[in-house]
Length: 257
Image (cartoon, rainbow, N blue to C red; front, side):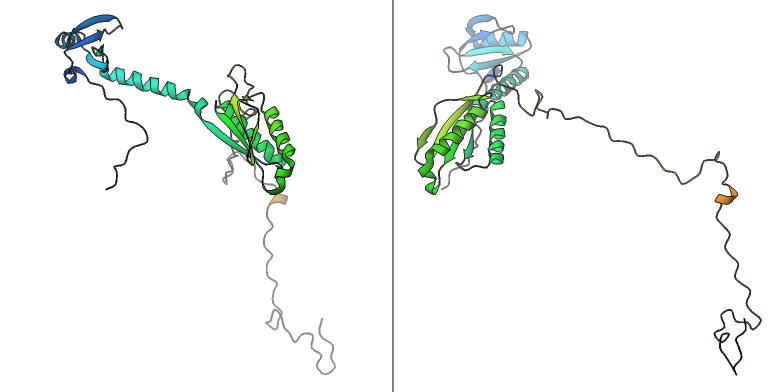
């Protein structure tokens, strides 16, 4: 029998309110945050009705349970806002990996460095991994130089947690970002996350071309007017416009001109 699907994100904590609270006595916190002491559940519900709010159990495991006089909708909104604020500071726990090689191309090295700077500017740690392949193990000092150069270029944005270590065929080092007040600014982005130097240009309006001439336009000059079509030539007396026998020499006579 297969196990039921379990969601990755844990469900939100369920709070007991008003009549769902099962404790006989509760410690009550007033609407303004003041301590009202330990009172019976019936008295706490009466206070909640008097203030037109709900009695929310916020600490069910305490002895006695702690309840608060607050509007439940407002309470849930405040809790969701706190959860969002706490998630903003969890980037430091994320680790991004950047892989290098001893014979890395200068352009690829710059691309890897740019990615690492992006991660550190977002308060993420960067794990630098350089892997040796085949006979590259015979020149470990080249890989060590590449890693040291990478750490030197990334120094304005982060610092290594430990010296680079050779483990098997790889060199590992972890880079932690500096605090925001000690960290260099992003080389290509401003504080708002936009690309620095980017300008927004308004599209140029295309001129409107009208086929109708304005009423105030002057008439064209006679020389600029289109010439009249030529009239067809008058056919000759024999009735043919293009007689093929006109130039024919008959009986030694010259053709008529």
